Structures are given as structure tokens and as C-alpha cells.
Length: 370
Image (cartoon, rainbow, N blue to C red; front, side, top):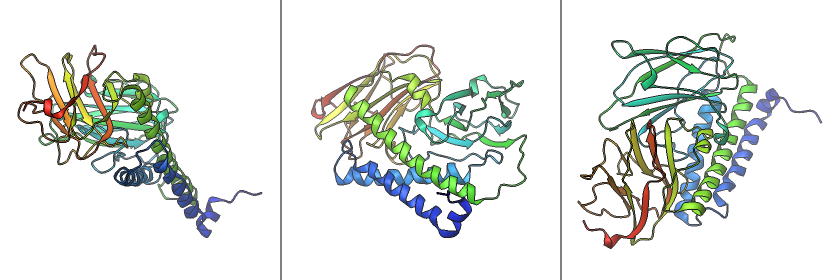
């Protein structure tokens, strides 16, 4: 049987029907037996898939040509996934390691940013690390201007290593206080393109729609698998995560991850006491919903970090994750916003050594004195 061409699919509408069929199949993820079976979390699950679709379409279709690159945002304030960091301004760019790139910009006021090259743009579980550079390693002009060359062959100055298999850039611009700081302005160009234009073709449309649907399916399935692992291994605890596993999912090698699962009854709170914070660029702790989407940090306190947290006289930090405000004695309150369970992620960035855990325990809310 002859395979139908992309042009024929576009003419008959099959390209759209196949795309819709793939999305319908991906939607079954929300109904899997591991997921919370209540209307609230089911609704969140379908919203999650819709946000993944928006991200997937941008990555696989709108910004998919590595010879005409531009930065876009897979994760932002309304597109969230994989315990996205509320302190980060994420940017992404589809590339191809067979080409060379120049990134230019001007430094903002964020304390730290990094750019990593990864080996996949579709499957977050296989985003193999192929190179990194961060602001502590870079040279800047007198006005904060900078240039980064990204290539397989080593370059002088600020150089971001690529491999022939590199397919994606991930930028993390990390705020100390998001309300007061501004990001670095970034632009990118391909230095040796071979195409004359960036016109859409039936082949690109077909591949883009297929890959967008695949992105929804892959990230959705990965989210459930990770949450089940954390729930079974260490609910309401914050031990070190498998760092290589995090790195292979697009993590930054400068970041040490403490990823886990939380679940609290109405009369419970999770008390986190971080006693051994090392010298570092920054640290934070956030909470997310079941679908590993950070809670709404635009309006509510769902994250604490090095710059915004209240410290005890001994330098430690006490954080309370609870359904209600525990009072003035616990100023580092993370609001669950009506959720009874979800993901949480602690990070320590740029340290030379790391504690084995962020100490956490469940307590009765009435036991908190505030």
C-alpha cells in the first residue's frame, strides 16, 4: 500500500484528522488509574494537556526551523510542566548541531542565568545534555553586552558547546525577586544556513502537527510516571533526586534537585526546616499540582528562595506548606491553594557541596504556633 504524501494529506484534510486522532488518544492519559479520580484534578489534567499542546505547537511548528531560529517559551506563567521553577524565566530555541549560532544580548539584573544545549526537542525524558554556559563563566562588555558562539567546534570567548545531535537550547534566567528584576535580552541567528526562506511546506506541516501531538503524549505520560515514583518512594519527604535522571530530562548541571510528592489532609501541614544551606548562587522550594505544574505564583506565595525567604538567627530557614496561613511565626508559608496533593521541588544552584535532604515532616496544623 502506497504511503499518502504530505501534499495529499493537506489537500484531503487527512493531516488535520490524523492530528485530532492523536490528540484524542493522548487525552486518555488523564483517565489512567494512577491519576486522582476527582473532578478538580481531572479538569486540571485536561487543562494541562491543552497547555502542553500550545507549547508543542510552538516548538514543533512555529519555531521549528533551526536555520531561522528564535527564542520562545515552552514554559511560562500559563504553560507549565515538570515542576517548572517559579523563579525562572525560561526560554527555548530549536537548533541543529550541524549549524553554528551566535547569541547576543545585554545583561539584565537577574542574579544568574544559564544556557544549555540538549539532544532532543520532543521527548523530555531523553534531552541528553550536550553543553552548557552560565553567567558566572562569561565575559561581558562595559554595558553588560555579550556574545555567545554555539558550535561543535570550540570558539574563543563565550562558547556554548554543541554536538551534531543537539536539537534544543534551554535558557534559565533565575530571579532573586521577580517583582523587582528584569531579564537579559537575548537574540539568536544561524551563521551558516543553507535555506533561502522559512516558508511552510506540506511536509513541515505534517511533521509539525505529528510532533506536537507526540509532545503532549510524551510529557503527559512522563509526568504520571515521575509522580508515581515520588509518591511511592518518599511522599512528604525531600531527599536528593536522581541527578542524572533530572539532567536527562532537561535539567541544568549547576542545579541540585530535591524533587518529591506532597499530600496533606485538611488538618495537616508540611514543615520543612533547611538547616545546612551551602554557599550558592541561589536556592528555592516550590509546590505544584498533581500534574507537576507550579501553582499560581503570579498572585500567591507558592515558592521561597534565597532572596525572599525569612531566615532564623542560626541561618536556617523554616517553611510551612499548608492550606491556611500559619501566622507570623512562620512567614515562609507556601499556600496549597485548595490542592490536597501534588509535586514539589527544591533546588540548590551553583554550590560545591549539597545536603542529602531538605528535612521535612508532616505535622498537625494546630501544632504550629503563630
